[in-house]
Image (cartoon, rainbow, N blue to C red; front, top):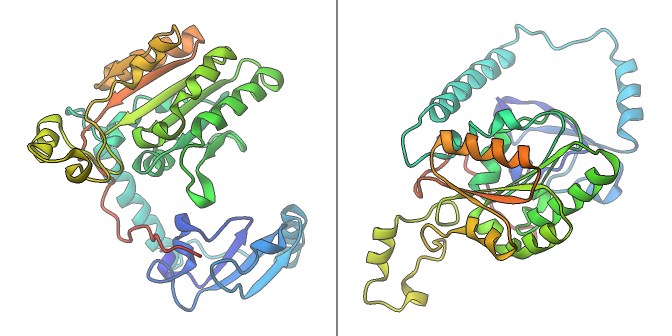
Length: 307
C-alpha cells in the first residue's frame, strides 16, 4: 500500500529507518511529500520534500482542513482496498503467532500476556532490536506521550534511564500510574545497572526483559557450547550471540529485591500481576526461542547510514 502512495502528508514524523528513509523499494520513486515540522533542520531530511512548511502542526493542519473542507478520499478506491487487504493479512499472521503457546515462546506469544496490563494509566518504555520492533506492533498506544523508545536514531541503552525519568515524573504529576520497561536482552546490557538507581529512588518500575540469548537471534546452550568447543571464545563466539540463559532476574538480589524467571504465557501473566500489585521494582526475565524472529517482511529494514 505504501509503495502505491502518490502523496504523503508528513506531520512532524521523520523519514528515518522506521519509514525506510522515504525511498524505494518501500516507497515509489515518484512519491511527493508535503512535510510540516516546527524545526527547520528536519525539513528535507532523507529526501527532498515537494512542499516543506515550517510551522506549528496544529495551526497548519487547521488551515489545510479549511482549504479542503468537504473533500475526502473515496473509501471504495483501489488504494483503500489494497490497504485493507494487507491489514487483514498482517492481523491474521500476527494473531497466529501470538496464539501459539508452544515452548520456547516466540516474540508475539511472549508479548500477548503482557498486553492486557498496558492500560491508559501505563507509561511504556521500550528498546531493543526485535523486542522494540515487534513491541510496536503488539503493545497498543492508548494515550499520547505515554510511550518512549529508541526513536529516530535507534539508540540502545536509554531504556532504564528513560524509565527512571518517567517514574519520577509519574511520582510527582501522575500518581497511581504505572511504568513498564520492556527491554531486549542486549539493550538491557548497555545500562542494566541502573536497577541500583531504581531501587535507591524506590521507583516501582517493572522491567521486562525479552531474552533470546542474542541480538536479533541467539543460540541454545548446547549449540552455543558446540560452536565454542576447543576454540578461543573471543574469536569463535558469533558477534550477535550472548551467553545463553543469562539470569538477569537474579540481578535484583544484588539490591535486596526479587526477580522472576519465566518461560510460559501463564508464568508471564502471573509475574506481571504480582509485580504490578506489589508496586516494587523488579525484573521479569522472559526466556524465549533464541531463533524466534518477526513475521515475514516484504521489505526488510534499511540500515543505510546518513554520515
